[in-house]
Image (tube, rainbow, N blue to C red; front, side, top):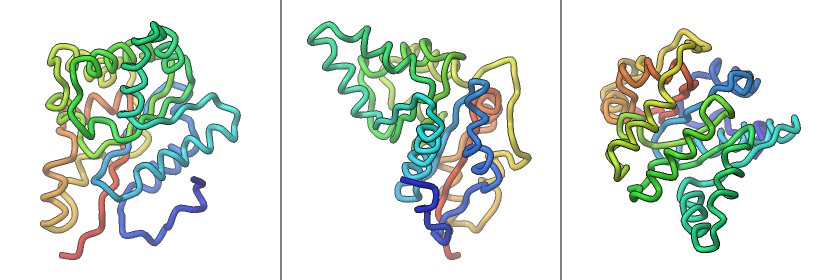
Length: 212
């Protein structure tokens, strides 16, 4: 999907200045990552695919796959002892885009694989995650609380602060009508999580324009 195929008249809201910064791919220089959050159907996958398309056109090694497909592939790799090679493939690519992360419960194997992947990519490559859950909700869908917390902590803590705009993600929880506030109250990152992600991740929240 190309950026010019995006319907700019779509009834969704997001920080367009931040999106412009993301499409510049400056976050790859950190390397930093990006979170594209929002409910089903607002175009997160389209935006993530667009970032991948831009990266490929710039000859940047890029891999995009759905989270469920990634975990199934890692599980299958254990049958032929190719797990190390598969994990290395995921860890070494410069830009990894994981779509629909934490959409469904993650068993112990998937949770452990996510932890290993986060450790392998930490400060080595950029990761883009799309999710309809906020980071503070991810822990609930992971089986091993210790590994889950360690993985989330690793991607949400860094000594370097990096936020490309002045509109903090928490602002979406205080703007708009009552219906929008109800959605944001359930899905926006908590202030503590937001502060952590400002260090490592650019956070773009996409949500539908609702008639109040």
